Image (cartoon, rainbow, N blue to C red):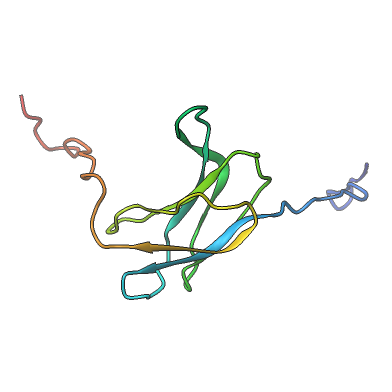
Length: 130
């Protein structure tokens, strides 16, 4: 490491960066085949021993682009995985088990809500029910 006081820069030398492999990639569409932008896409791992128990992965999520496309990078855990997508105004969509490295995953979302909206409580200045 060297420090150039005059410019405020720091020379870190050669720092190797490793690009994680593609864990999963694909498209999110509505029932009519139109791409959906802004869908939160995540990976879940099956951590159950005797019966499926799905748990969201850490740092394995992304949002679809304007073409409904997504790519999630990461290292496989060796456990079965599936992909799910969520977006306001649509029901949650999920795949069955997918293999790590799959690049043609397709999620189809239908209009609706999976869960009722969260009640944030009264707004500032509004009376509370007693």
